[in-house]
Amino acid sequence: MTHTPPPTPSAPSPFSPTTPAFQIAWDSTSLGAFKDCPRKYQYSILNQWSPKSKSHHLTFGGLYASGVERYAHLLASGLPHDDAVLGVVRWVLEASGSRSESGEWLPWDSKDSVKNRYTLVRTLVWNFEDRQGSPFKQLILANGKPAVELSFNFPAFEVEGETVSLCGHMDQIIELDGKPWVLDDKTTGSALSATYFHRYTPENQMSLYSIAGKVVLDRPVAGVLVRAAQIGVNFARFATAQVPRTPAILDEWMNDTRAWVTLAKRYAEANHWPGNDKHCVMCDFRRVCAVSPSHRAAWLKEDFEKREWNPLKVRGDVS
Image (cartoon, rainbow, N blue to C red; front, side, top):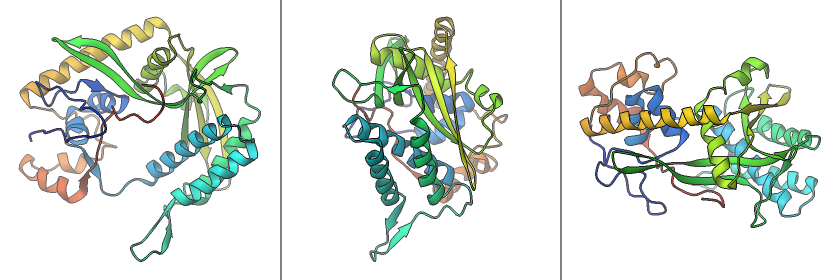
């Protein structure tokens, strides 16, 4: 299956001009997909296939993250806490629905008793109330804007003469005990025990965020604070844990990343993306890889759709 990166008018291409299937701007999503399985990376990143039916977990998590971002911006604009909360509630009620062609309002129906429109609004409100007693405070950038939804893109290393950059988007940078930390909000159905937070050390996204935070601020960050919300039918619980990274660990991660990207170039040059059948259990493409290679294109068109992906598309105020 050949690869032709789609044109992206609002951002430069993340692929090499000389080796079109070789990515030269990597975010945690694309790097994580490649580490999981090169064929998964081929389907999801290179060919940009996405399941037609979006998981209600992704919808919930995306709206939740956007609500948290909006709250931080409203506070930084000078709004009192109560007004900022009300602003987010109004926004999320509108964002969690759509209008049909006939103009009928259709609220989002997740068909799930735990993650749904009601628990989304409730969890956001309770999160904001819980934050009132938190020891951290929002870091304000030199331009006066809150350090929220920050896009970053910086050259990291070279692979055979081509400069490879690391890019992506961070939720927030906050201050705790006078030190900057990257703050990342998560939602889960799991208990917020030490076992839950252990999954983030080591972990691809958190290591990249620790490096990116230093680049954005031009000074080291202490690490990442993972603020998790446990969602239940009748409750929401919140906990925050520090996910530190030492300089030696980050140096090792960067060296490993160079090795992974070098391997990706070999696969791009050969136009061969081998499957890793040890990582199939939760993969969206499991059914595709289970059929003969000659039938996979038809299965992809049946169950998936093309969606735009470009990690160089800027979201926030820092790049």
